[in-house]
Amino acid sequence: MSSITTGSVPDLNRYADCFAEAPPTRPNTVNMPLKYFLPMRKEDIYVKSAALGGNENTIDSVLEFAIASYHSPAVVSLRPPEAAALLPENSKTSALKLGMAVLKELTEIRFLDPSNTAAVGRYEGMIKFISDKNGVSRAEIDAYYRQGIGALIAEAVNAEFSKVSFMLDRKYNTTLTRNSQTGQYTLSYERPSIENDDKKITATSLDDLRAKMTASRDFTADGINLAVNEKAGYIPAVVYDNWQIGITNGVNGLALVKETITNFYLNPTQNNYRALLGIFSRYAFLTSSIQDPFAEAADWSLSRTMSTLNHSVYSKIVDDLAHSDIRALARIPADSRYNVFSIPAGIGGGGPEDDAAVLRESNQGR
Image 1 (tube, one colour):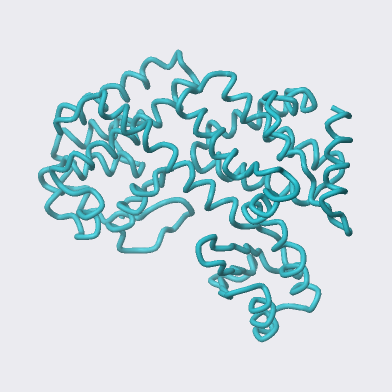
Image 2 (image 1 turned 120 degrees about the horizontal axis):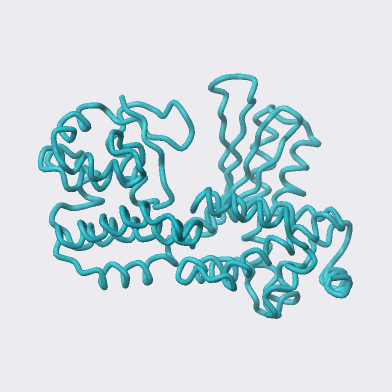
């Protein structure tokens, strides 16, 4: 077995999962059988793909594996049918997907360290290889990236902003997720002190969730109330959807998060980056000034989203926030739509009027 690290492109993660014959031993990894690696080691594509991340001796990422397995004469015919369906052989779309994934990482590298000419050269070389090998132009790859990056970001945002994580009854690591399409709730919980103790409850509504949690006998009454009455009300995607009428005058915070991150990935200027810092800063202001539980939940969702997209970019965000004036950053950008990120939860009987009052006060205080 050889372990490779998952990436931020869901299609490529799903592609790699098709090859796995054993569960991962560590989070965010896929265990690959050696029968796929050994034939590739004899081919030039192995070294070329492995070198993308800087170590030409080892393919250690899903992106490197996807590029190598797709272009390897020895392996492409050995691929599981499910993998071949995700990246069909001799397909222009397959080449564009691989090119887009490489271009995304190149965009991140150029933002983080534009002086890293060695890495930039490797990634530019890989884009040229994909282009020449598959008969797609660099312009087509660029266009595919610009058209598709928004959907990739939307998938990451939807996944993280549709759930809240918390400790339940002082023993369960718990995540409550709401499916925006079906309205279904899923409660996943585990005791970290016990191996293989993962459990899951699926419910059609919060009332159904309460009934099933009670029937499970795993939770106290206080724990059930915490999950159903409180934490469910902090799922950011649900809150932002509900706030559009009566509070934000049609502004959808979830859509604005997607727009802000997408703008950064399309054009990673300082202005677009600082707009992203502005959202984090607004959450931080509410969390530090009034200990707002919703802002804390939303901040955690945004943090997970950025970490999923690129952990190094997220680390830079954390470092820049730690060395910045949060009050000043919370005024950026000068776009009234971003006030949606300054609205507190309104807990303790607070309704829209109370939310608006706190919003005015917090904006004046900054």
